[in-house]
Image (cartoon, rainbow, N blue to C red; front, side):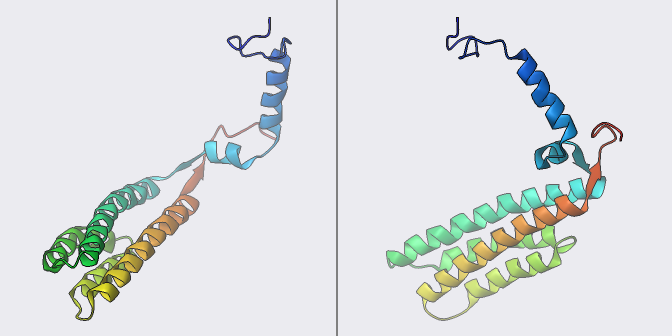
Length: 160
């Protein structure tokens, strides 16, 4: 009976269909198969770990900037946010400095933007843009690391 619980809505036995799909997968070099059959070398894993830590810390920076924007809209003082940004950005910059220098420089630039004079509205806008650029660069760096440090596994497919 082809009910919901048995996983076979048509009532047919499709074990042969599953086998042919597996055979097709083993013969076709699909991008998913390549992704599953690859792994990263040690340096790549270390860089990805650094990037993951940086993404978490940049999320904290983003939270501070968004709270600052909310306070700016409510005409509240923003001085203590500058100090929080400086404290949150320093570990990110030092974490990224060794392997991802340009992104570290972008984080340092965010701190400089927070200390500049000018209207608070322009400052918040610039800081939002800076955080967005940092996040985009971290994502791009993640892709580059995965591409550069990929090692094919020994059992990726049948030998031809």
